[in-house]
Image 1 (cartoon, rainbow, N blue to C red):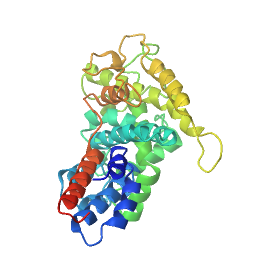
Image 2: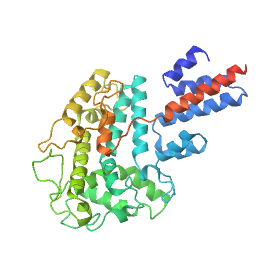
Image 3: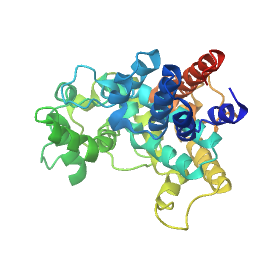
Image 4: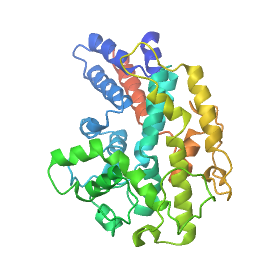
Length: 347
């Protein structure tokens, strides 16, 4: 393989790899396959999640099965539930994308990915309790009582009520209604659940950081489990909400698309992340910050684009979550295909 193509692959510039291979492949099936792989890697790097299932269906490699686990099903009652079953695969992919975007020196995309990581973070915290990633096909079994109702005893905002209500029936109708739910409501589900976990039967005022609306009269389903389990969930949800309100996420709102100004520099991102990390890592009055729970991760791992991000995600999830290898595995397959074509003298 010539050095220019190898350099593009090392930098994960798959769009450029597609262009180069398109000019070279001729009738060689190995180069044609490498080109298709490069196009798939580009779409995955763009977090084109709506088409992950379709992308995966075109390949038989193990990474394709992992991609399905990170995707949202296209059909409301698809037996493969993907990220609705568990958000862990999607978070592994987002952490990988964050690293590769930083390696490609794309500060705006780093900020966009950091923002996306926050979107479902409270939902990731709730996964240990729900047993799924907020799957609307299973929500009726997981919640109850005032959830999604107009009860005056419920402190949910009108937006949270709408999200709660839609989460109960999103899979009952057609694809259009289900897709509308995913587009407009699903990313808000974790924040609606957050109110339920931060209830006055679990944590007293002043024990932990004030991060939003709390529930004075929780439903029975919201206080199931031991007090220790509920306090653990409350802590992980609060940490997720602190991240959503952090300086690194706020950068996304100051980085407009289509303007000449406002794109953050690498220095601005580093400064925002340092401020975010200091706030995330601050001690809580009752000493319960999940980042201080002795998880087996290095808080300031210099290999990460945003050192400590994997530790944060893991602390919120209540389990180890690190950067996946879907895109890098595809890169290895592309390299192997090109080398095979070249060794045969057809490249």
